[in-house]
Amino acid sequence: DIQMTQSPSSLSASVGDRVTITCQASQDISNYLNWYQQKSGRAPKLLIYDASNLETGVPSRFSGSGSGTDFTFTISSLQPEDIATYYCQQYDNLWTFGQGTKVEIK
Amino acid sequence: EVQLVESGGGLVKPGGSLRLSCAASGFSFSSYSMNWVRQAPGKGLEWISSISSSGSYIYYADSLKGRFTISRDNAKNSLYLQMNSLRAEDTAVYYCARDPPSVYWGQGTLVTVSS
Image (cartoon, rainbow over all chains, first blue to last red):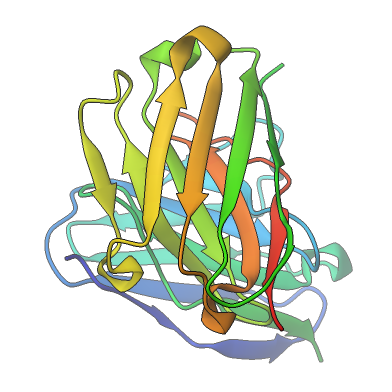
């Protein structure tokens, strides 16, 4: 089974700050990685697919990078509406999710 | 527009059974593998099962220990999850989700296991 280690588990940042979340796979998953945003009581929303591709309609302040085992998700300028929990997901071999990162406004 | 609509959740006693359904529309259902993912209250996302487009290949998370069965009916554009021997720790929102490319999720259905 592929394990996904996501960090940090939570963070607090100011509006306008750059926010970075990392995800590490237990084995090479190429670029088979998605990033999701989940707001309270809602289904996850796909933001980034194939590690670095922005889903249609998603603001350009969201970005992703990486391949192999190490991946990064960035919000270039945090906005109040970005308050949510973010998850990485590998789909190279079935699905595995990271533990999630709760993003709050300082 | 792609839509996935889950149904069948509710309150069930420990040891009971429940069958979830997921109605798909807006895409060629028979061309995609499908998945069930659950989220316990206040917890993260947990993949629990996957079924290939034809239904020939089925996979489960080890944590289920053979209690759940995934199936699909391509003629009805529907995905199912039969859940038996339910436990309190199975309490969660259950989502159906389409495989990539472009992962789509339903809105989820809440399953509560309690006496």
